[in-house]
Length: 552
Image 1 (cartoon, rainbow, N blue to C red):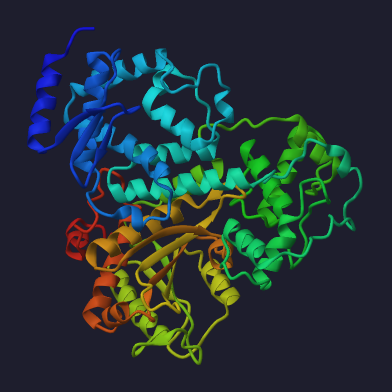
Image 2: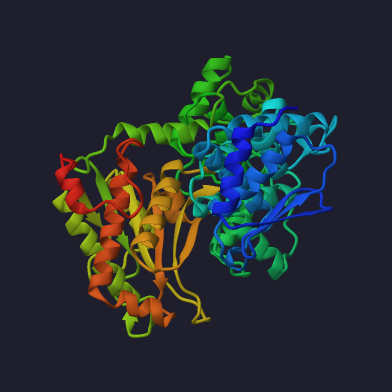
């Protein structure tokens, strides 16, 4: 192969600019130590100039874009998952910066694939975990046929869109959680392949009794289902255990007065109907009116009795049909489209602010701060700023009352909110625990996330961390009732730890609470801005919104 002297000259300049030490050793592949600045290259006798150039460019890209810090001690995601996501990011950035490298990467990976460097041979790639397939996709995807589920494609796209190292870590966390779930589960999604078990009415049928669970098993289940991890069988865990034991076909599903039917079988039904283009709303495992309407539409379309009940005939019809919607999770696409259609202005938006606790329930009290007072003060500051920009704003409580969680959910739903923001202050027995975290509705068990909620949580997290010195504890998918049952995209924000002297000191300052309020306002506005109108994290100010005419 001919040597690309232009590229080689560019790499030589990069090596000199970055003050790297280059060494050749008998290693399997190239590597770069961000601390010592040592670039180790393999002693490959058969490697072409193109492959050699790619190896140097790849590792130099790490020197340019991978942080030189002890992030490995702060991130709980195994490093191999971070490596997959970071490799994709740095290669994208180095090719963007030096266009001549695109051809080099393409040619080198083609050569490596032809020589079976990745040792996949005639493997059935569908049996490989998502991390391995994602790695192959970003390196040799041009030369392979790789298939992904809708959820897997979302994760791959998230990896590909990462621009910052923080976004890489977020993608790695999602990738790791997904792979871990798939490894641990036997059959997570309810199976309807054997429809014989649905031959009865199912009204009085019960699945096998749950065996007694150990605290470790309870904690594992809670983590898996997006619940508070306590190791104890509280009400929410018992309810989730009951929901988890139902498989589609175990019982007849229909709309009932309160309490509505809940379970993994309902979630499987919703997912199945959604895949075929019927709108069940959010896949939440609750058989409501929208689910009943979708069942009736399906029944009418296949020519069976239209009664809105998912019994034996409906199960059999579902088995016989395959999904007809592709290109992404339909419910998520609908949610995203609905949010975009609302336009950028805040003047026509209904925002519900939910300061936690209230009244006699003061929440976490430590280091001279009271949670209920702090979050109420911040909610009022956000309220004033939103009103100034023309939004309709409602607080779930006043200064001296404490509605139940169910009442807060009903309050938001009755006002047909566009967005719900729940404010909290966390606490922990370890006083060193500190930082800000955000939560949105998501269930890997059901393969669904609130795409708008997830985006807003990410915007809040990034704005708060950019404008304050609060530690980034990242965003997390959870299935708490406030997130699950609120019809609008809902996000919970834990604004530091009352138990941490540093966080408590920050929250006690009115000027710091003003910064939090402005951060939340900007995040709300960015949620409704188009990609081309959006600005970099931490750069927008309220005055910018007014001058841009986003008040109307």
